[in-house]
Length: 324
Figure 1: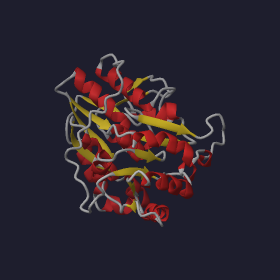
Figure 2: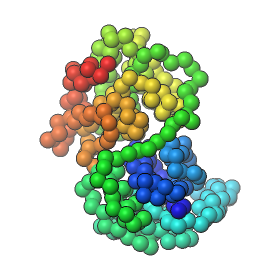
Figure 3: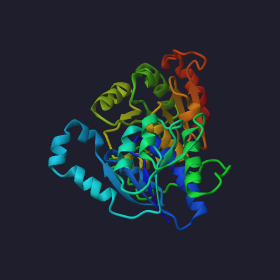
Figure 4: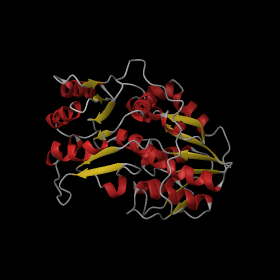
């Protein structure tokens, strides 16, 4: 059986889809998947051994200069790749407007959530077959249930199995410390950022245990923030931007990670690296990290105006120390 998955972004959302693929492989050992994904995340789907081919979109670039992209033939090339192969099933696991556009461009029927359970309601118009999947459950379980209904089996009651293999991921060319932890300080929204001085307090505690602290980044501003956090702390290293595959290799060798609410926190969960993830504005029951050795600290969970400052460095240290 050959299945096409449409799920474009983002890193954590992509990783939430892996258990659905693992379930399907257990039911149908010969099943394989192709995956439509944004070019910025093209490495991620291939971490699951059942994914054989990736078709990339560039909707972020295309949106900025649609005419030039059309003129260069990028849109036509994508349309041709999207419809190049025959599939037994095509399923949109994302269910928002951008994934629905891709579903609409596919010339064969697409399966997806119904209008009551889509992430963005109009997306259901792009699907030929609809499924009601309860909203108030974790994204991983929603996708496991959708895949089960589409392919005709009962969703397993077992814990999610990410089923990844990152053996093809190589460490970056620069030398890494022998013993290190990863502090994922960056996040997509200011409301998800833990204060710089709190990270620095935690670095001081960790350095007393003879561990180095790696501070990853995804862009220039995040690198500058990493440098600021690492300032005057010899044990802390602001990492330059690396590929997602390289970051996965780095994370896989970490003793433990402390993470903001961002994609690398889900990477730690996928790789079963002990991790403490800090939350303020996210409903962890719906999209929090899931997996072995994962812990959450939630800032003022009973408040509608939770602030990351409510999580003290001492609170994090009390959970982190036993893991070192």
